[in-house]
Image 1 (spheres, protein in one colour):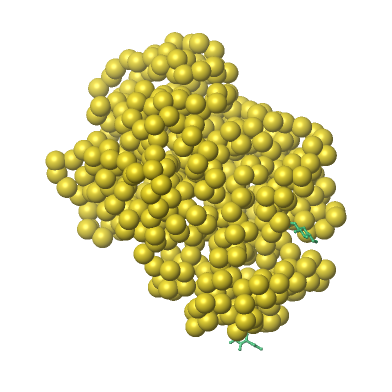
Image 2 (cartoon, rainbow, N blue to C red):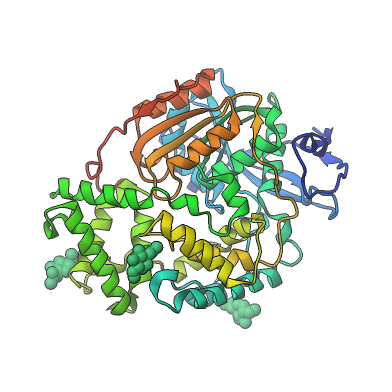
Length: 515
Ligand SMILES: *[C@@H]1O[C@H](CO)[C@@H](O)[C@H](O)[C@H]1NC(C)=O
Ligand SMILES: *[C@@H]1O[C@H](CO)[C@@H](O)[C@H](O)[C@H]1NC(C)=O
Ligand SMILES: *[C@@H]1O[C@H](CO)[C@@H](O)[C@H](O)[C@H]1NC(C)=O
């Protein structure tokens, strides 16, 4: 099946873009579905075979560079017939693996959607096998570089920020050199266009049904803003402030609730002494918090060797930050912090999750930098401007985790190219059907405030508060939230203003090994 369409003319209605008005002859060959490989099908509790296929899309939507690109697409078939139109998923990052994440999360998300839709995901350009964002020729090279790149969080010492800034320039230059021909073809706006190519190729009603998590909400917000007339359903779950994403160095609003989320961890720990290894070290959350604060300051001055690694300020902060994303990891976090607190460095578990450069190198971590940095409008070679945002804004938003984005804030301002197309509007649109915006009360990286902000931007959208912890609603599930999501996908029903959903299981009560 081949049809011709001119999607650029549609986009131009929505605002001004840095894209020349070129008419493309877009071939839409459709998706040829085949069976997915066993390792993807293995995730299915129903023993089904998933569909895997590829879709040819334009390499360069401006038309300057001829050629096409193949997107790898996965389809989880609907559980019930007759089925409704497909729902597309994006798993965040940016850089998350679309196929593996879709297959592995389908047992959780398919029942939540009501089971009447095919679920579709794909490896966005820059990830998987599609223009993979490799700034280094091979994993060995990448590991060697990452082992010292971005080693320090800014508040580790007086010297840390300057050093990480210099490392950020090296990363930016490495990527600029390696990707000088194709790097600018990777960015969110082109990914939005790819997404609508998938919608078109599915041959349904030509409308987008979407559930995006974390960075997936940024992709979703950009899609809604660029193509407001093509939206049937859109759930933005764990919302990033899109104006900050495009127009700040380090997205300060992201950390609005991080300190509060940490306090919740401490409180729940003291309330659940049998499940929280740290509880025996204090009689109140306040006292425990002070102990950990002191530990962090001690590690700044005197890090602890553990095996061939070192547990210092950056390692403990990174551990805490990443584990706060998932309540299923809270027991582990407590155990690891206890080992560090008691200087029990013989236990191999101490460093279990502290970043392993080999593991990081096996995946392609540059995608996260590449996509975020290429999307951002701000550039500077003046470290003082960056320091002002970091210390003047981020440290005020979060006294505990304000330096978490040190790697982004030191690399992106020095990025030496930009995505060929970036959405530059203000996101104030009315979509053809209303979006559902969902935020957690205690999310360490996508705060409730950003969900409110985005809901105000998209006219007619509804806002649902998931009164849970961690990053994304699925981190601490709620039957109430799931019901609202199903009602929305199945019937377009929106929650009443002010709706709040409670999670099913309190902190430290979930099965310890689930994740
Ligand atoms: C990795 O790339 C570097 C630089 O091109 C090269 O010198 C090295 O031999 C490569 N290593 C492997 C294991 O391929
Ligand atoms: C250190 O941690 C290990 C593993 O949790 C534990 O078995 C051991 O008893 C601890 N050692 C000390 C001295 O507390
Ligand atoms: C930076 O460190 C100082 C103490 O050394 C602390 O008071 C402040 O809260 C820290 N800020 C962040 C964002 O880590």
